[in-house]
Image (cartoon, rainbow, N blue to C red):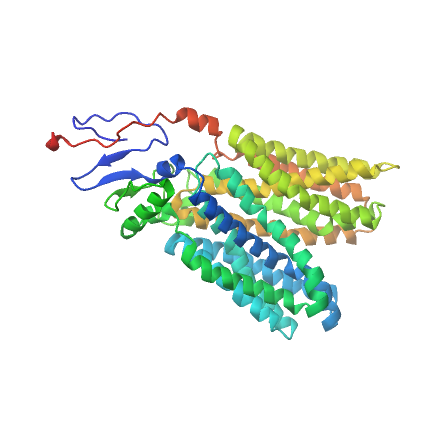
Length: 491
């Protein structure tokens, strides 16, 4: 809203760009409205490319242990169970890093926290390279996990605060889907590097790339405009950033930049996400995150084994897992385009339901005497599109659900809770395989389908969904030719 010379307070649209003279020298500018009015090219596009590069690096380091593990077992004479603490240390580090670095991003800025993640990736990976015992590798993998845990929530937060509402969900999906693509890249590199240079070379690559990005992005990566708006001393820097975003010199740094966001704040970020305004959203977001991660890790780690247990050849199991991973791109990016048109509630819930149905049909297919290979692989692709797509959607909805000053901490905490599902998945799978007699594999898929339905319901019930872009556009009034109003004393 703005107050005119006569004291009248006219109504304003939800994202109307408004400037109000508070003194002879300053005017109030809604940063969110400026960002929503800006074009995607070139500034948000370049920032998105930076985020994708970092997320590819994150995915490379995340999946490195999976490719190094078999060679490590052979080189050090270990058993598969011996690698359990190493993988657990990585998950624990990720859980700590997602909260700690998300909180740090809210305190010292997204950019500083983000480059801190790259520093942890470098230090952890280089120390893994020089490890000579399982204890050392476990410890340093935990350090790497700190950086891995912080990258995703900070990337989601930063890209959400630099892109307009029209393209935000699509861009977030492209950024998140870069993680499994980074894992695929690690698999390709592993085939050439390990035979020539040994397993340690993978950790060296995982250290050198973050170090290069640390040096480059410490200079190139811009700070979040909404974070700068909350710190008066950063307003001149914010003015220059917004001028680059708009491609014209509209601000000089004397403005009073603000961020208009709904919700109720408490004294601390954790009490804020659990106050009466955010409690329902927090509960449902955490539930959807945890259950979907549980399903994702079950598929990722056990799909091949389960298909082979159901009587399928090993090449079909391998192909099914590859198609499940390939579905990530279709589900994340394709679904994000639909979110722009129809909003996140129906698109995300519909995609989650498709995943539940596909998983149930996998169970039915494996029960048949003559299994259709084409049908089975198609269902694996659909399940992958659903489960991986939902991971991207939940980050976008979580970032949309909380205000700027706690967004990094809130998204980081949601990601930490998702690790609960990830950690539980091996225990549930081990319990199933230990049952005597072991139930038919279709029973396991029915159980997973039920979990996917829980994701569907919890995601649908989240109260703070991303609205359709058509609704946002309809609610946005046409810009006025001149929004600056002279105070009465100048008339």
